[in-house]
Image 1 (spheres, helix red, strand yellow):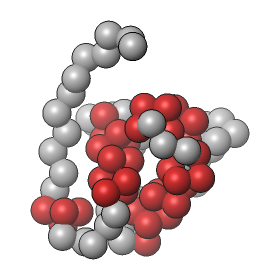
Image 2 (cartoon, one colour; image 1 turned 60 degrees about the vertical axis):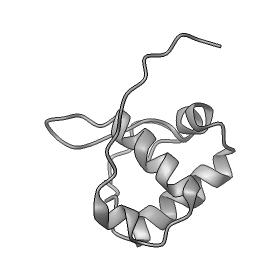
Image 3 (cartoon, helix red, strand yellow; image 1 turned 90 degrees about the vertical axis):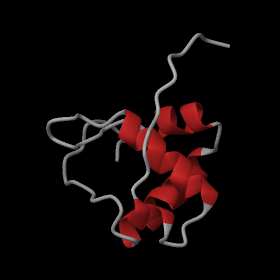
Image 4 (cartoon, one colour; image 1 turned 45 degrees about the horizontal axis):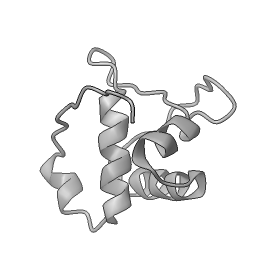
Amino acid sequence: MENQSKQHVQVPDPVQNSGLQYTDYLVYGTLRMHMNGNTYEAYPSVQLIAKECGLSEPTIRAAIKRLIASGDIIPTNEKMGRSRV
């Protein structure tokens, strides 16, 4: 396994209380690790999120849809690649 630096990601209370699935929390935390601290934007690919979370791409897409529906993440219209969020 690769030597990856571990990073703590704090999940805000509204996310913790929104009734999301545990995979949604994992995806949210992974998105936060890729977030630009100045713009609060993150553009990791679905493939990268799936690899880092150890989940399938359809599971990642479903989690992202739930996070958008709950208002915990806001999609942008920017497309950075074929499978970017």
